[in-house]
Image (tube, rainbow, N blue to C red):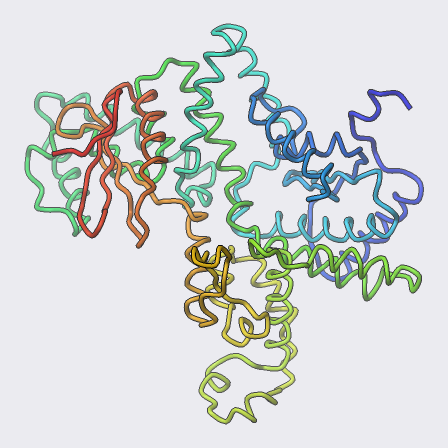
Length: 506
């Protein structure tokens, strides 16, 4: 086999093609609904290159992809982790299989992939995903390569480095904006700007009334003054743009060159494409694991393959000592929900029952479990999934607990087995992916053209070292001082990066 054959994927054929058709039919029989799935074979090197690039073979060049590839390949070489498959949210849906997998592994992987494909197509958080992202990513890569040829690789790569430090400052509500909604908003924004420009010196009373009514809709604001209405840019930013979408705000208002605006827009589009996958890690992997387990144990598994399947499945489901396993938590929660809705252990009558013996043996033979999990698959993300269905009974059965480092013994030790504390910590770690919530408050702070951000405090203070680095990168984009308001030790503080250092605002 030639070397270049190992560095690219190949279509499946022969027995694997027959196996794909078999698993495909099982998935359809269970009611799964998905876009066409294209399976391709590749070696370890290729799949780790793809994994480092988010699953897309033609992305823009950047050093972080090489760094991630190096980390993934070394983790495999040292036996720390192994990637069995990769599936991409596109139409058709591309899935990559490892050539080194044995036949049972390929069965498991194919069934798992069809679970993911069904979730991608039907979950509400993926509704507005660009299903043509394979071509879009390639176009993005070609554009950025041209910019690198024109303006220099180091300059473009430095700009990308700065932007990637705040690519998490997004608004999840944008995921529900259809192309029509975006088009209408942009048209409204343009028409309003045109109307404002026509009334620079003496605006019509109708326009003043419109802007005043918009401002007064926010009951948390003080009474609107004529001076506030004069600042049309602030009005447009606050009421026609999302304050959480910092990247969009910079695109519209930062003093960027044309190529910089284009690159920032490219990185924002890609960040929003990957956002639903970050929001649904547990429920998505749980759904795919549920279906690979169901299809294998009830349909595709031969008696001679049971030991191999049990070995691979238990390895995937093993709980980590450092983090929760999304595969394990997800599949067990789906199974728990199916059991509860099959036996009728839900609703007012069940919740109000105080007879523990009766409650333990409760069974109304409702048989609504399968219908319920399909409904959940359609509407939930990780936070809503756990918030609604992570019960005390489930927590105790899974033997979950919180832990913390004990400096006296030098070990991580169990801190609490209390359900409310465990659930609260779990949800908190998932809220905004454990990262701080940041909003744009003003692009003209103190009337000096400075950017003011606000940290939405949720009980955890900002890590000021990380904040300083991010403000430094934002200064690079904004070209003027960048401020952030936060709470420290119950006191409201504002810090400013002025291009040289970050210091408190007096």
